[in-house]
Structures are given as C-alpha cells and as structure tokens.
Amino acid sequence: MNLLLDTHVFLWWDSGAEQLGSGVRAAIANPDNQIYISAASIWEIAIKSSKGKLHFTGSTSSAIERNRFLPLSISPRHAEIAGHLDWSHSDPFDRMLVAQSQAEGMVLVHADGIIHDYKGLAQLWAR
Image (cartoon, rainbow, N blue to C red):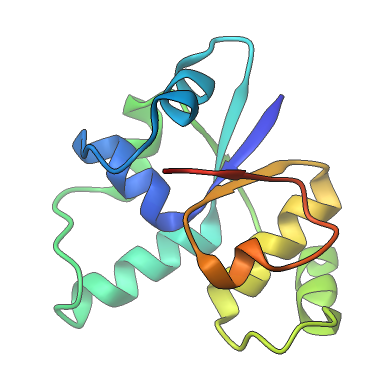
C-alpha cells in the first residue's frame, strides 16, 4: 500500500510522539508499504518553523531519509488538480496533499477533521 503522510503525522512519527494510533504505527512500520512525504509538507514545515509556529530542528529532507520514507514532488498535474478540487477548504497544503493522494492512488494518513469529511478520498485516520 502507498501511504502519503500528512505533515503532522510525519512530525509525530519523526518525534516518536504518542498521538499516532497503533494501527497507523503498524501501517507506517510495515516494510510492504511505501511511505511518502510531499514537498508540500517540507514547504509547510519550513514556513511554520521560520515563523516560530513550529519547532523542528535539522533538515526535513534528512528526516525523510532517516525514516526511509520517499519524497513526493509536486507536479504541474498535482497543482492543477489541487486548484480544481470541488472543496471549499482553503489551506493550500491540505489541498495539495488531497490532490496528490488522488492523482497517485495513495492513502492519505491524517488526523484532520476537515480532510476526514472530504468524499472520494482514500484515507486512514491517524489516531
């Protein structure tokens, strides 16, 4: 299974936080699953860190490698899908993750109530 981790899920996993449910922990740790982190999440972490809204030390790219996750670039197709989503949610990072998940046939792993209500998305609740 291909899993795309939402930004907070990636941060929780990387820090060893206890917010993640046991089923999600097992899915992420399962070597048969491919785990992806979007460039949108890297961008979001960088912006929030520089504004003091998030404490993340070190390199996000290094954290992706250390966890043996795979980076997912943003393509023009992803951007087009994100821009045309029939969804009033205005967060550009969440819109991109939903678009990438749909475009690439991935399961989006998150704990976001707004995303949870989005129909037609393969998703896994993280808590």
